[in-house]
Image 1 (spheres, rainbow, N blue to C red):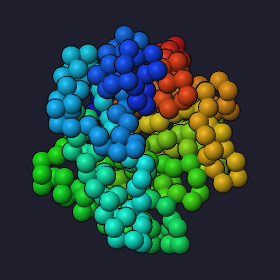
Image 2 (cartoon, rainbow, N blue to C red; image 1 turned 90 degrees about the horizontal axis):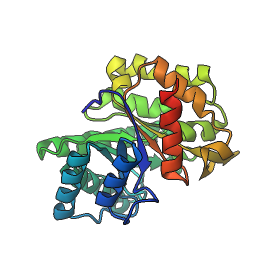
Image 3 (cartoon, rainbow, N blue to C red; image 1 turned 45 degrees about the vertical axis):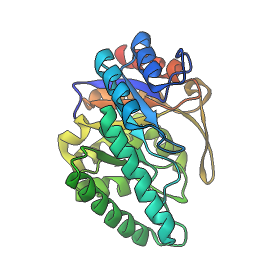
Image 4 (tube, rainbow, N blue to C red; image 1 turned 180 degrees about the vertical axis):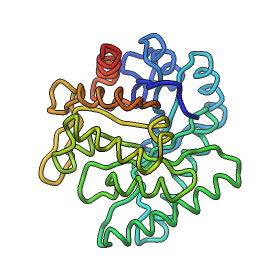
Length: 277
């Protein structure tokens, strides 16, 4: 479901929420003046149908948009059949429960290259996502699968890879993690580079691609092989003012999720900076 504007929120329950529950997180998001929250199923999908119903009701009442981050333990390029099946099942369960919460976008880290060539890894990921998308549609689960751009050179998930998957496969759209893209090669950190990324989104997916974006932003520490850890925006070299400028110039809509150590502080910094442009 495309949003009317660009929404700002947190990756998980804000630290200042009264309880560590999704419902309390949603209520706190609204109190803070933020707009969205990503449900973090990053260890496993522990939520049940009854809990999902409560989340759906809270999000509707507070007017907070939701997305889901699937478990980290996913490798759609695994050479071991049991690990591949378990990876598919984790995305499926995240989509099933997420959709019951009212979340449409299901974000995941797709794969590692391991000993495969990039072409072999792409072919395997593509085939698996095609089959998973068909399964979700056949069961009436309205999920958009969003492979994320990744921050290490060992990980599948360049901008080109996630855009190609999104162009070729029904029900697949990108999750653009701008901090990961910066950390991967130490580039992509200026207005012309951010604008170039958004131009590629538009070339590949049309204007609709810009109007239905899912993005991650944080400060980031990185080295020769890419991402090391997330940092506060102001303690990193990530050029978020120029990114926000590009997002505004291109009329980007969707969800911008903050993954900084200070979730709500940096999410509010991003929202206020954007609104001040």
